[in-house]
Image (cartoon, rainbow, N blue to C red):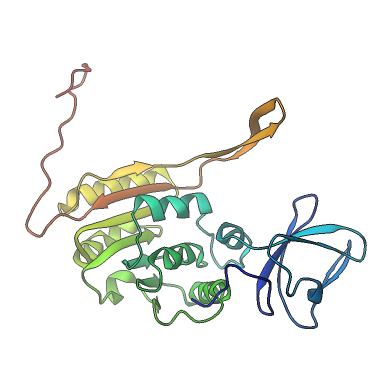
Amino acid sequence: MGFRRHGPFQVGDQVQLTDPKNKRHTITLKEDGVFHTHKGAIPHSDLIGQPEGSVVRSSGGTQYLAFRHLLQDYTLAMPRGAAVIYPKDASMIVGMADIFPGARVIEAGVGSGALTCFLLRAVGPEGHVTSYERREDFADVARKNVEKFFGGPMEDNWRLVVGDLVDSIDEADVDRVILDMLAPWECVDAAAKALTPGGVICCYVATTTQMSKIVEAIRDHGCFTEPHAWETLVRDWHVEGLAVRPDHRMIGHTGFLVTARRMADGVTPPPRRRRPKGTTEEL
């Protein structure tokens, strides 16, 4: 992974410029490049050699903060062939599906490559991600977005397959399977065959109907633990002196996540124990 994450800015670095109104622009530094805006121009030479966190001034007098962009900023601004998984959900997938350095991960439904970037960074140079995407146009967009973020091809630890997961999968003993598609229940059996015992399946769906169907499919399959379904909501806070209050806007529903763990071969989970109707007594 050749993309630089620290040190002085160099030619080829992607730099995020933020103006006083918090509007952000991402540029790729070139020797003779110039960033043009209605607030004036900034020669790239003003940035090359400067430390990250510098302030540059346009010819019109506007000051810009200069940082390398964070992955969350990049994924929200990247060109899209399909909708991207928001950073709040991508980070929950990395955390709650326990994507660890060195993990072997299968991803089905690559979309525009946003989640792929999170997965590749989480597994690190010793891990591997295989992404399955049915649509070749989406795959092309995803490949360009991923390679732009990491600064080049990811041949050592990323394989992008154009095709259906069920028909194309050729892997076994993988650690994690991430399904981001309209009908993930169609891939539960393929995921079970690919996962190592103890591995995690994680599904990202948009509607309650999809969530219900994938939860029941995982339950009915018999090779997984009881699935866990949830969503995350993100709300910023305004903090200025003693004026402390929640912001009026928030990132509400974007999708549901469902996770479960692969049982050992030949082992079925114990039957679920439910509270009887009409009582709060624990069983």
